[in-house]
Length: 410
Image (cartoon, rainbow, N blue to C red; front, side):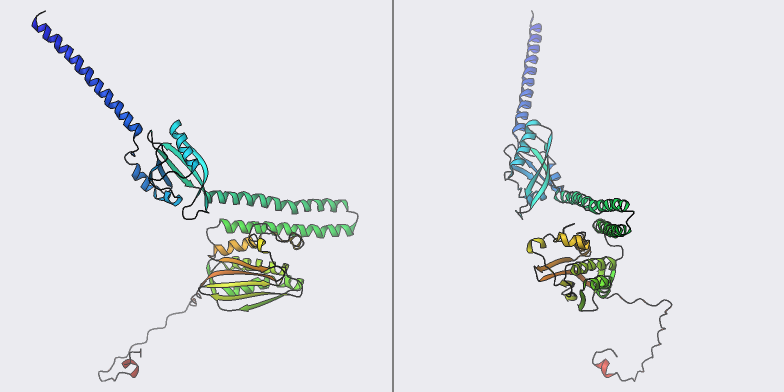
């Protein structure tokens, strides 16, 4: 083998050794990068910007459950960068996702940082973004769950309440058919049948009114409403019921006040309070309806001298279908929806309703609504503006009036 061949062999050996060494270096660098990536807690590029733009509470946690990044909304739950996840269920969710890979979700309750007693229902979803980092997004679903629970309760309560008059009507119809040969019994059953039908009609009407108040974005006929008009219509609508019950309706307070709203809805709400006061007042007593301005609001109070409401029941009287006296409600045909309608009608107008009551001393229900000014009078049709009177030219020698000299308009 000559020198040329030896040189070529040496060159080939050198190339092989160099390539192997380079390959080993590349493999080593890649392995090192993997180790660094698996052990790194640095957030990938762009994650911080995404967290900053999120409206929901979101956070990035590492393997030790330490928060490495968080959105602004996360602080509302006391989740701050550099601190450990305070909730065991969140830590378990992040750990399970990190070990199993992919994504996971859970429903849990968290406390607000500003109000520890305020429990919020939260939907949590976790996703792996690096081997050591997990993104957790928290969505507050408290209001959605509350509305859904209200809907379920409303449907269940309505179905239950409708069963009573419907069942009674069915039984009375069968009784009328069985007593067809007894005119007196037929008349008695027919009277009860009519009463149950009226009760069913009242219940259906109130359910529809309550549903309309809860679903509509705003009242259809909003205008400046005279409070006197609302009070007068409500009292006149229940004058016959008051006379039949031996109850006197007394009106008092300030006149000439205005609120902005729907006169029909406000009249119905006040009428419900008056009807309740009549139903729970003894014969010979009086029900007072008073109006007064309080700062920038108008208060309409309905006072009775009836049986009163216990302090425990005062917290529930505005609930749907709640009746403090079941026996009296059956006698008077009460549906348990009147005060709920009042509450939603007043809230729709930006006001509030409250109750004061003592057992044996009576009750006072007060509606408070934002006060507004009287509407501007409309110009009669066909009226024309009076032509402007020509102004007289002032003489150069005219003496200014005393009012003009004092700075007052002449």
